[in-house]
Length: 320
Length: 296
Image (cartoon, rainbow over all chains, first blue to last red; front, side):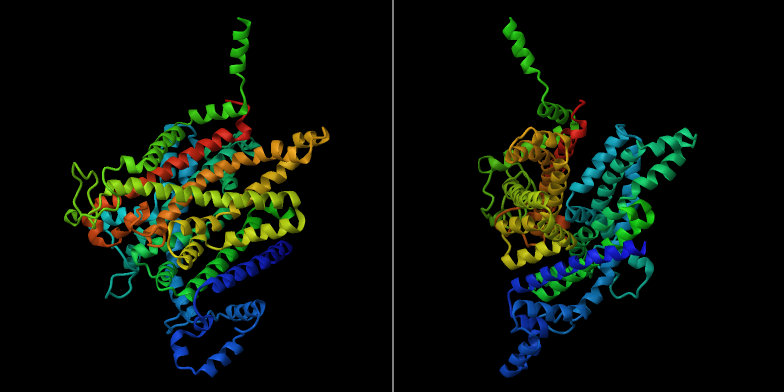
C-alpha cells in the first residue's frame, strides 16, 4: 500500500509542474507590467526609477523566461503570489479570506447532490424501463440541461420575491451577529442550485453502474444463496457500483468550482468565485492567477486522495 | 419478377448503419429532441425572414412593454422586440456551441491519434498534458482568456475550444489502443492490407461512433458555457443578442421581479435546446453502441 501511495505521488509531480507552467504562461499573456503584479501599483508610485530597476533585477524580471519561471515558482510555493494592482492585502491574504465561504458552498452542494442523485440512480436501475425510470431520466436530463443562472433567477423569483422564504443574497443577514441558523438559511438556495447539475450527473452515473453490476455473477450468487433482495441490492450491488464514483466525484471538483463562479456572483456569496469575477471585471490578473493556481492544486490533491481512497476500498487496484 | 425480388432483397439488407438508424428512431426522447432542435435550428437559420421585427431597432416609446399581439414576448429596456431578439440569438448560441466543439474535437482527433499510434514518448507527453489541463478548472481559465482577448463571439468559441480537448483526446487514444489489438485488425494486417487502409477503413470508423456521441453532449455543454459567459457579460457583447446576454439584465432585482418576459424566454430557449441535444446524444449512444449492434 505504501508503495502504491508513493507511486501515485510521483505521478502527480509532473502534473503539478505542468499546472505551474500553464499559470506562468498565462501571466506572460496578461497585459500590464509584471513588476506591478508583484509589488502593487501604489508601492511603485513611491519608488524612483533606479529603485524600480533594482527591484526588477532582484526579482529576476530581467532573466530569460526559465529564470523568471523558477523565481516565480519558488515565490509561489512559499505562498507569495504578489499584490493585486490596487494594493492593500496580498493576493494570498485575499485568497485566504475568500476560500472559506467557497469551501462551505461546495461541500454542501456536493453532499446535497450525492444525497439526491444516488437514490435517483438506484430507483431508475431497479425499475428499468418502467414509468418511474422514464420520469426520473427526464428529471435528471432536465437537471443537466438547465443553466444554473436560470435556475437561480427562477428560485429567487419564487422563493425570495414571491414567497419570501429565503434571502436573495449574502452570507448572513447584514448587521446581525453570526448565527448558525442564519448561515444555513442563506446557504440553502445557492447550494441546492449548484447541486442540481451534479445530482443529474450522479443519477445517470449510478443508473448505468448499477445496471452493469446487477448482471455480474456475484450478484447472481448472492441471490442464489437466498439472500433477501434488499440485502443483495444494498450490500452487494450498490457497494460495488458506487466504487468508481470515488474517481468521478473527485474529477468533478473543478467543475463544481467553475459552477460556483456564476452562483456566487448571483447570490453575492463572498467566495473565490465572486472574487474571480470581480477580478476579471477590474482586470486584476494576479488575483485570477492565484485562484487558478490554488484551485488546480486543490483538484490535483483531491485526485490523489481519490486514487488512494479507491485503492483502500478496492484492493484489486493495488495489484495492477 | 426475379429482378423485383432481387431488388426487394437488396432493399432489406441490414447494415449496421440501418440498425443504428432504427434503434435511434425507437428512442422516443431522442426523436422528440430531434424534432424540437430541428424547429429551433430552422428558426435560427431563417431568423431574418421569420422575425416580425428588427432585433436591434430601438423604440424608446416601447420601454419594457409586456407581451402584446404585435410584440409576442414584449419589449426590452431599449424598446427592442424580445421575440425577434430571441430567434436571432439562437444563431449565435447554436453556432458558438458547434464551432467550439468542432475546434476541440479536431485537436482531440489529432493528438489522440498521435498518442495512440506512435506511443512511447509522444504518448507520455500528450497524456500528461491531458492530465494537467483536466486538473485546471476550465471555467476560470475560459473567463481569463476571454477577458484578455476581449469579449466577442469568436473569442468565446476559441476559449471554449481551447479548453475542451483533454477528455475527447483520452477517448480517441483509448479507442485506438484497443482497436489496434482487435482480431479483425490483425486479420486485415495478415491479409496484407496497406496500413493507411487499415487505419482509414478499420480503425477510424470505430473511433467515430463514440466521438460523435461525445461531441453531441459537448455541443450541449458548450451552449451552457457560452450562455454563462454572456450572462456574466464576458461572452457575446451587446447589441448582438445571445440567449445568455439577454438574461444578464435580470441580475437586478427590479427586472427580475417586474419584467419576467426579459429573462424567462431566453432561459427556456437555452434549456430546450440543451435538453434536446442531450436527448439526441443519449439516443445516439444507444444506437451506436457496438455491443448492441447485433440485436434490435
